[in-house]
Structure formats: C-alpha cells, structure tokens
Length: 83
Image (cartoon, rainbow, N blue to C red; front, side, top):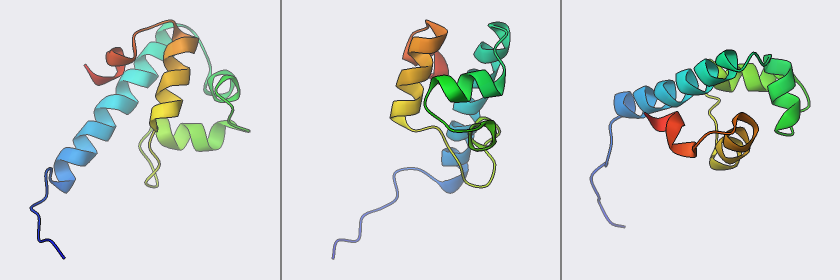
C-alpha cells in the first residue's frame, strides 16, 4: 500500500466546507428563499437535512450535484459558492 501524504489538513477541509455553506446561505437569503423552499427545489424531502448542510452540522456537506442544482435555482455561477 502506498504511503501518500495528505493533500489538505482536517482544518483546511472544515474551512472549505464552512466557506461553501456560508456562501450558499448568503445567496439564498439575498434571494429571499427559505430553507424549505430551497431544499424542496433541489430534491430534498425536508429542510432538516438541507439545514445541516447549510450550517455544516453533523458532518453534512453540499455535494457537487447539490451545488449544481443550487447554482441553477439561484441563477448564479457555481464558482460563486467558492469565493
């Protein structure tokens, strides 16, 4: 088995997830959308799981498909979530 070094630290990973979550939340709020409206629009059954992703809680994070759907819903560039 290869012994490869880690590319990022756990702290860097968490900071990245926090950045994405904060940007999603900011854009959603600026558009006046609720968590429930947003969750349902991207195929989530309720706002609970979505809220955990948006708050980076309980190890829940947005995946690429979530971000793709959110960029369509928000009519923004997907890169806006990473700035």
